[in-house]
Image: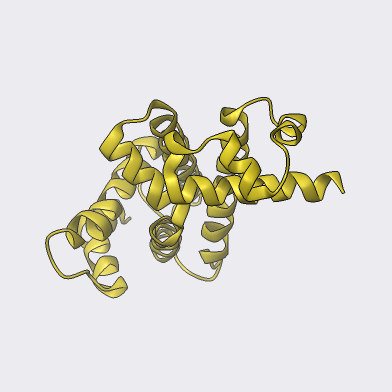
Length: 190
């Protein structure tokens, strides 16, 4: 029963953060949405920050799962890097909470939101870095600095998916892969 209440609170808080953002969400709102007393929330979470952190940790785990599912051991590092990055960014693009948080971080600069966005980006970078290190280890790509390469890969992808769409027609997944190969993979190829 306690787990159900906790899950109910987490779902209500996720909805509130998704609709109103971090700054505008209050524990009173969450209690109303969860149909529990505010005191019930405090039996599980000491404050809004702790509740938010639990939601974000779950979101990061879900994002990592999406990336792992995109990886196919029968494909090359390049194809898997593309597939994983594409799925991570599509997840981020369609998940209501991440959309709202990116908007709040950009427009209001809410420190807690900026910190969370950094955590999410660090989790993505860590995933990519692991895959790059493995590809270097097995001789699939040239030796490189995995941390810097992961950063460049992610920023290129963000540019091709998000930034490009703000000015022009969205690129297809095939076009993004082709550009990714041209700008990055040819340089890393052995």
